[in-house]
Image (cartoon, rainbow, N blue to C red; front, side, top):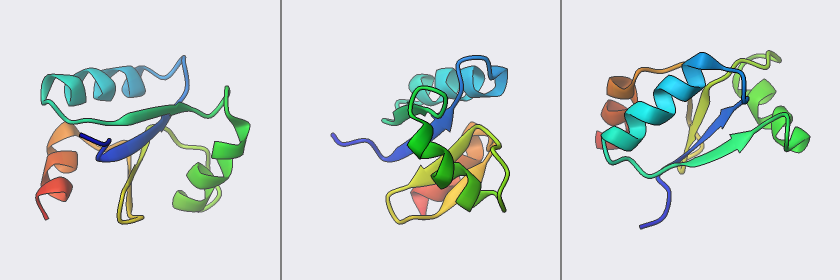
Length: 80
């Protein structure tokens, strides 16, 4: 099954680690992109957050995004 979303993060972001753990526990497939390891991804994060580099930023296959969402918010978006 292909990833249902991409989560942009950094290695030091506690919120990112927590959300990744919760997504795995919920059985939600996702791709993780560390914006420090892939600096070109920073533009995606900035675009979704009015120029800010706020992580975690979750981008869905339809192009919409959520910033620092709860796992429940992600599940609700996927259920749409």
